[in-house]
Image (cartoon, rainbow, N blue to C red; front, side):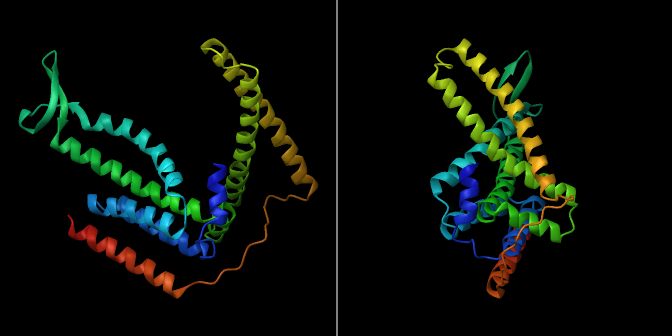
Length: 256
């Protein structure tokens, strides 16, 4: 999480207008979700990875670790789609029989599973590109210009920033418990984990009260006002983005 914020401020696409990156990520994600094509989804996954790693200079190892997180959850969900009860044995690729019920993978279920995982990874890679190349302050600024509710944007900002406080606190508590052999065995590990969660909840409550008091003391009136960096739109970037989206639409239409 900390590295995510670090790369958002230090990547090679930092000077690119955040609205251009937002439009690129959003339009590509919409195409990925609406186009019923394996090819387009796979191209988007590779495209976003290439732009993030090659142009944004995000370390490949870190990017792959990030991509591995949703992939593990998707694999579990996709497995339940790929494996189901089979009535037509002619469509069965492989499976097994339990009490006169055939459970296995069919051509249709396998195609559906692959399509869903590629589409999900494509959409996730679009969000990764945006979060790895654009600071949260600038994303919130774009949403504010799009007339999103101020309460929603303020909550986004507070929750995002508070995550780092909680992670830092949890790490310190965990380190302290480890030094005191709090995870020496399974029983102690469960007890230490319970204490960590309880202390984290109490600490987060106290920090939230302190944060609100500090905001009130600084004249908080329901809006977070921050200084925004000035950017210039690039016609070249906009043209490249437009051409890329048109090509993806053409490829998606031709692959049906």
